[in-house]
Length: 262
Image (cartoon, rainbow, N blue to C red; front, side, top):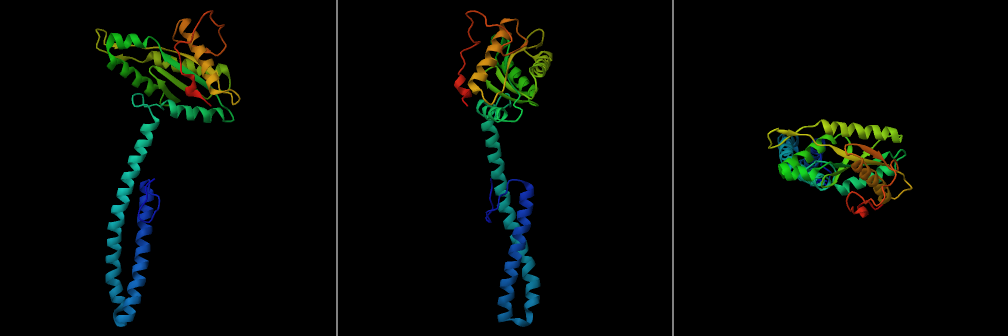
């Protein structure tokens, strides 16, 4: 947070205006007292005339100096706010980064109504990069970021995203997840290709957020459901435990589940 030479917090224009008024009043009172005492001693016959001239001049000087200090403080506060935002958000999608999302997930799990955790993974994303170039892949990531910007969501890495679903029941969570996937499938992305545009789908797995369950276990449950969604056709949502485990199956990719340590 920014501070002026009076050590008051200045992080917004409203703070700046309050500080400027406060500084001006204090300076005017102190200066008036000093001039009044000095003049009454050295020139008591002209004390009011001297005060009428000197006090406004001092107030103007104070306003200018305080304004400069406050402006510098606000500029510093804006820089710090920008740094805080960048350190908590993924630069490409604009969503929360992995660490910031984990903090949100911990808070959601501790809430009175925790909701559900959804992992979403873009289908055939490597093929998009290979066929159309990484610029097209980046455009898709940005599109997903825009799509999920109204949700409590984050990018875990690569083409993997996570969303906290505010839902009371598993069916409600599934419906919300399917709505997100439908919105994703409807998006079109311009590419350097004769068709000019491509569509991209995603698959998702959902697990309930339980205050008594370690987040690593919650992640594994959602990850297993995501794997089932991939195996059974992609562009769909599965709930944790909804599909029997496929013999010999492995998670979609070897995840570092310790990223979700409680």
